[in-house]
Length: 130
Ligand SMILES: [Zn+2]
Ligand SMILES: [Zn+2]
Image (cartoon, rainbow, N blue to C red):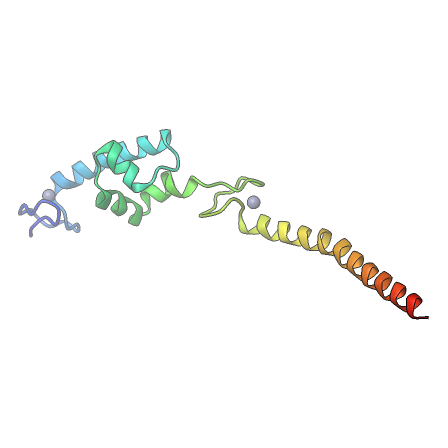
């Protein structure tokens, strides 16, 4: 079987790449992981530029679930409770809490003001007519 990385013929042992490439990937993985420890939030391009580990290899680590556990998925944290999130500033739970608070606090005085204003406007209108 030919190695999918370097094309070298090797004895197939459940993986599509040869032992030399596996060894190299392991080294690359350590390099990327160390880089991510110091540069939390680094994108794949940045990793590639600064470590020399190519994008495909980094993607492979992510697909295997090794980098998501080590760095990339833990990069973002909720501003409120600190739990890890995939995007934005808050986790779903805190976003829900925020929207609930906004709904209960914000619109109530606005609505009552508007109602009072319309009542006052109508009142003055009526008083002018009569
Ligand atoms: Zn190989
Ligand atoms: Zn949260």
